[in-house]
Image (cartoon, rainbow over all chains, first blue to last red; front, side):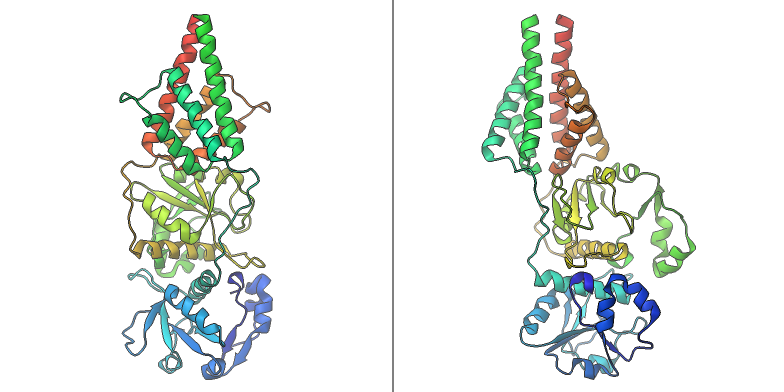
Length: 220
Length: 220
C-alpha cells in the first residue's frame, strides 16, 4: 500500500491486531499499520463510502454485479473519490469475500490472470490494485535526469554526412548504390537517441578512419 | 509468475537451489520452480535474447539507458518476443542489479511508486512486471510485424569486439585508455535494439575499415 501511496487501511474483525509479525513485515510502512482502523463488520468500514468495490478471485458468474478489470475500475474509483471516500474490499486469504460482503459492494473487480492458475494471494492482489490506482492517479512517468544534452538534428545530420564520406572512403557501399546504407545508419542513431558525447565519440572514430585512409593514399 | 502465465525462470548464481522453503512457498507453482534453469552468470542467461530489460528500483541518473515504466515496456517486450527470447532481469532483494549487469541490458524499467517510499520488494516487482506483460499480451494491439530478427546478445558481443579491434587499428583510443569507448558504443547499440541486418551493415563497414588499414600497412 505504502509503496503505491495509499495509507488508509481498515481491518474488519482481524484475528489478532496489533500483531508482532505484521509489524515486522511492515518494515518501513509501520505508520500505515499504526493508523489502521479496526471495525467488527464490513458495513461499519464502508458506511460512508460512495463506491465500494469487492475483489473477486474468480470470474464466477456473479451476474448481479458488473465485473471490471483492475485497470477499468481504477479511474472509476478516482472519479468517485473526488466527492467522498471509496473502498476496495479484499476477502480473507482462503475464502475471499462472503456473499453477504459482496452485498455491500457496488461493483466487483477481477485481476486478469492465467486461467489455469489464477490464485493470486492476498498480498499480490492488493499490490496490483494499489498499483493500478497509482497509475490512474498520476500522469507521472519515470524521467531519468539527463546530464549530457541530446544531439541536435543538425549534429545528427553532420554525423550522418560524416558516415557517408567514411563509407565511400573505405569502399563500403551498397550494391544497389545510393543512400541506402547511410539511411539505415541514421535510423539506428535516431532510435538510440544519441547524446552529444556519443556523437563526438562516433565522429572521432570516423575522423581516425579518414586519417588512416589519407595516410594510405599518401603512402601509395 | 504462474498466475500471470509465465513459466521461464532463470536463476543466476542462486545461494541455494533447490530450496525447501522456496518449494513450500511456490504452492501450486512448483512446476515453474522445477523447470527453472540455473546458470552462473547473467550473460549465460540472456545470451540468445533479443531484448533484455533490467529492473531499476530507483530512478537513478542512468542517463545512458532509457528508463521506461512497466506499462511502456511490456508491449515492446512482446513485440521483440515475436522473433526470439526476451528477458526481464531482477537484481537481488537488497542491492538490485550491479552496474556490470546493467551493461547487459538494452533498456531499464522502473515501476512508478510513492517517491517517499518506493521500496517494492522483489516479489512485488516481479508481480507488477508479470501483470503488465499479461495485460499487454491480452490487449488488442496494432502489431508492427518485425521482419528481421533482433540481434542476439552474442551477435552484439561480436559487433562490440569488432569495434574494439577497429578502434585500435585506426588509433582512436581514449586518453584514459581501457574499454571506456567500446562500452559507450555498446550502450548506443543496446539502446538502438539493432536487428541482424543492422549489425551486418556495421560489421561490413568495420571489415572495410580493417581491409583499408591492412592495405595501408602492406603499402608502407
